[in-house]
Length: 612
Image (cartoon, rainbow, N blue to C red; front, side):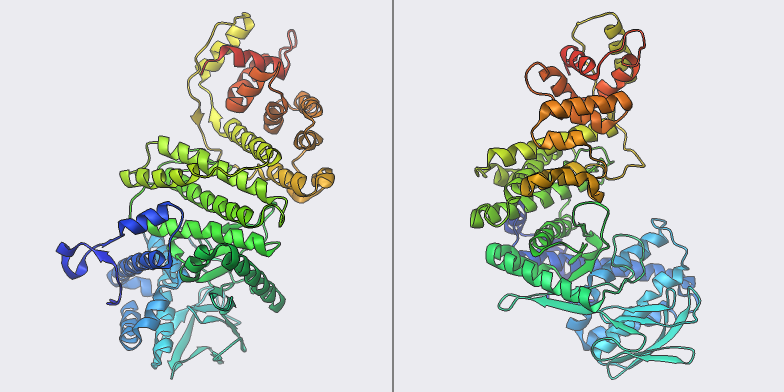
């Protein structure tokens, strides 16, 4: 399969099959956080090339192993049908092949064949989806075609069209299917489903589209059907009700109005780069959940947001991931995936270099969004905007320093982050002292919370410090760097304090009510006092919590945040910079019944003697 209308930059010495490259001007645009429609089209061209490569790898696996067809027709037949459709309708079939969830399916099937994914489904269920793809291609080309297609629990996904559902089927069954004059039909036993030209029908759910905007439009598939619409393994459909679809349409229209009015360049790029919106289930935390994957370029996953501006910032956030994913398919920015060991200010778990770089770029995009909102409207539209800007900006600046010092970046990666860092350094916006202090409080608490959960001090250092404590020594001690050990059972732990910061910003009188809400269930009265600015009451509260549970990591980090910069300066600094070391020493010396020590005394001593 080939397409001749791409305008990719190529190496001329390599002839008609030259390798795609990216113009330097496009690289610089993306590195600065932008990306005009022509640049986004270059990324699409890169994705087209990548999609054909993955499709070819899929085909070579399929023809090399006839058993992958199972009870279905030979996969070579589907390939031939798809080629025939492409010859008749090249643009329509190209659009089909570039459908985001087609990319996810292809990558998943190849990955599974190579042992990178596990499933109870027979391999022919995954590989046989090529027959459904050929069915779509034949319909788009107006050709007649008959085949058999795989089913998952009685359901058949026809890419870009929708899903058929039959009853009385085995878990992994097969249905007949075909096209007549561009119309699709499917049959299982005596039950035939004729796919309507528009909308749902008997046994049929159509894949719906929603559109926002007039002069500048965004049109996306609202995909609640495709098994490959999630990040990894296949998932069952979760059909949105008519009222839910209308709510998504309303939110998208509102978000698009904000983007077009206040972020015009971003909106123009989004209109070219985003083609699919996947509703996610509501999560347990405070925030709207969103995600994207490099296998499904152009798709954004998002849980129902509370309002249009939340959806607007989620679109801006995930579009940054989409752009960087497309760029990293063309230009290597990191030296391999790496192991999860880096601190990311927005994540509760250690990240590999590639994931950290993705986060740096995404949070720079979030900061750009809130900066533009503030410059356009001040804080009049939302009291939380100054906090959101300060917090996301500081996250991006901190993380860009971490990734640049990690040694994990290629020369192109160093150049990319250098250009992005220059953009962030040029922002000299005035942020109110209250918003800046609140952002610092959340950031310092998250950093300390990450360290105390994932970092382990050297055992010999802990032993030496405990002996020094017992001897009453004040000699300086150089402690080695702690080792990162990701917690395999780690769950989200930081959303409570972040949510409390937002609550204090928009409704300070309702701060204590957070303790009774699901997202704030891990918070304490001491946390509320801390975020209301009552450090003394917060300190006493965290000390009482540590008396009851000396292993309470949130109490240790909360204590560090609550201590002032006066007489408790050394205790505060070490509790925020090396809390894992303080806790390790306290485990040994604090519980001595003959010479009990307070957490503050131990922290202050460690802060005095430890020089690194």
